[in-house]
Each structure stands twice: as C-alpha cells, then as structure tokens.
Length: 427
Ligand code: UD1
Image 1: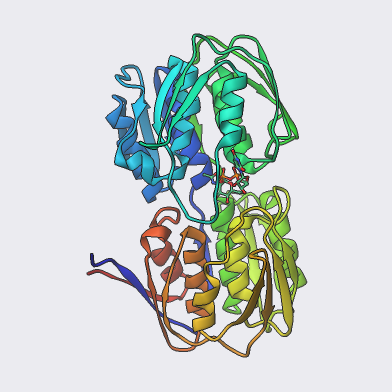
Image 2: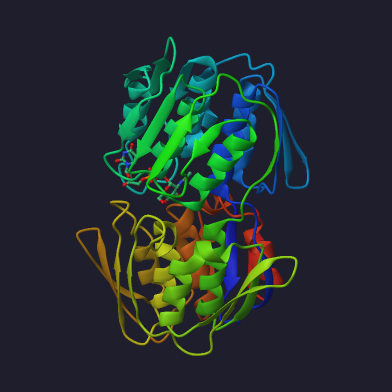
C-alpha cells in the first residue's frame, strides 16, 4: 500500500506564532464520556486528528448522533444508544477506545470491548483498569482467542481502590465508571496529568461529583443520572511541548499561543537549562509561551516521570533536539519499557546515541544531522523525526506519517506557517 510521507528541507529557523489545538488525550476520553449524559453534549476546542475521527465513527456505530462539521465543535447526542458492543476494527485500532468501557459500564452496566491497539511502545497491559472495574462490582471476562473483553454488572457500587501503579488510562477509566456508581468511590495513587483534571471537570459539568482530580486521591460521589452540557477542552500539553522543542531545535523564535504555561513547567525548565530563553505571558486574550534559542544547546539530563515530571510523550522530540547539543545528554525512560524506536532513525541522520537496558540513552551531541529516509514507529517518534528533519542539512523523507496524523492537527501547515519547509507528498 502506498502511503503519504513528508518531505522536509532542513536548516530553516522557525519564526512566528503557532496556535495550539485542543488536547488529544483529553478529547479521546471526553468524547466517550459524553455518552454517559444520555443527552446532548457540545464539545469545543476539539482537534481534527485521526483518533478523534475514529471515535466519531465508533460512537455512530453504537447509535449516537455525532456532528463534527462546525470548526472545532462536536455535537454528540447519546439519547438513543443502540448497542453496548464496541468490537469493530476501529476500536481495536486505537488505544484510547478503552474509555468506552468505563463510559458504557457507567450508563448501561455492560460493555463488550475489542482490546485496544495504538502505539507499540511496550506491553501496555490494562490490568489496573480491570482491577478497578471489578472492585466496583463488574464481572470482567477476557476472551483472549477473539481479543474481546466482556464486562457486566448488576450494579456498580462505590469503594476504595488503590492503583498498583500510576496510570493515566486506568485513573480516567475507573473515574468514569465510578461517576454513576452507588455511593462513594475513593481512588488513590492516581495520575495527576492535566487531562485527568479536564475529564473530571467535564464530568462535573454533566452533573457528576468528582473531587480531588490533580492530587493523589480522587473522591467520587456517584450520581444515578447525568445531563448534557457544553464544554471546552484544554489546550494540548504535548503539542505545546513539541512546538517549544521545535523552536529551540531550529535556533528559532516562536510564540506559542492557546497554552496553559503551568502544564509546561518541566519542559520549560529543561529547555532553559539547555540555554533557551522561555518567556511565559498573557496578551490579554491568550496565555502564550515564547521560546527563543540562539546557540547550540547545552547537554541536559532528562528522566521521564508522571506529571508534573517530564512527560514521556516529549522524551522522543527532546532526544532529537539534544542530538546536536554541545556534549553528552542522558535520557532515562521510566514510564514505557520500549520507547526508543526512534533512535535507529536518528542514527541514520548522523546522531550518536547509545541505549542500555531499553531504558537509558546516552546522546553524544554531533555537529549536525543530515537528511535521510526515515520511518516513524509511533506517534511521538514521528514528531521527533519531523524535528530532526527540520534540524538536518538537506532533504529528509519521513514515512509512516499516519502515526503523526493520529495526534497532531495540521502539523505540516502549522510548521509551514512559521517558516518550515515541509510538504506532504500524496501517493
Ligand atoms: C496515556 C497517554 C499517553 C502517555 C501516557 C503516559 C492517553 C490516551 N495516552 O497513555 O499519551 O504516554 O499516558 O503519560 O492519555 N500500565 C499497567 N497496567 C495498566 C495501565 C498501565 O501496567 O492497567 C503501565 C503501562 O504499561 C505503562 C505505565 O503503566 O508502563 C503508564 O501507562 P498509562 O499512564 O496507563 O498510559 P496510557 O493511559 O496508556
């Protein structure tokens, strides 16, 4: 099969203003959660990305009416859901479809779910999601032969759940299910990522009682019924970071708008440590972050951590940036067990990177990268390779860009608008 690819002429300094879209990771949870209302929800600031289109298709398959034709605004009417079985090809394709489990269990007490796909960056089990649903009273059976999970509950009853590890997906999924359970649920050792808070805010707008999102403990008082609402999704933390890193990587000068600067502290701190100027501001309409870089970056050490630590989703773009730093940087990946698939592609461009135990990377800065034919292995690896292409001398061809389409809205157009030479080649 022939697929689109990006052609990048590197070496251009990025300059100008980039506008950040709504958060992918919040959107892919809030869209399924909207069906819990049983009414109509209007969601604003949603990104036009593949994962959102896929969810649109899945919701239609189960009987929701979905309209996403007016800008960044989606109308979801879930009054007449006709099925709790989500087993189509589309479901298996995207990882975040697992949020349909929490949403359908909450409203209908049943769900059949094709086990999730998504980016291949390690084992990514969903045992904590299952543990949480079972604790709330659901019976869960996994049909491994057909890769389908069956969940049924006579009713869901609130309880205390301590997660074995901090998981964004499990925190949100179990939060969804507990929102309509009988009594109170207390979730401990939960994820504190901005999109966890955003989903909790959305649930509360639908009439739920969710408190403590953004801390280690979330307390949920179950409500038998929710209602429709309007809600605007937060800006994308990872897209913001990607543009911040791209600006620094091209020795650029970029103002990034529609951002929440407090979500970016770990990234700003590392960019500043590497020698970039990062200024946060408010122009009266929007918060913005202004990134200016004049010199070769200084090497830095990065360790990926749960929020508010350095996000794993920006580890790969950051590695591209550090590949031409003046010295040796170290990167420790603690969240996913196999998130270095981009390294061999960066090496093809002249980077000097060694890996130990699939967890530690030593990035020895080289003078410059050179253009090459490279292949994205997952969404954020794709972003890293685009940044490397923008930094490199000569022409880079980035393949497998369908991974990038999953999570970045108009990536090429936004980069072109600030001076990048990038062209989507259609085949
Ligand atoms: C979410 C984000 C993804 C980000 C990741 C970490 C979405 C749609 N995706 O993914 O962009 O990279 O958070 O910030 O929001 N784990 C288990 N058992 C479980 C669940 C998770 O062992 O039941 C492990 C995972 O394998 C991984 C770690 O916990 O090693 C963190 O995963 P998790 O936070 O759940 O990531 P996702 O929700 O998949």
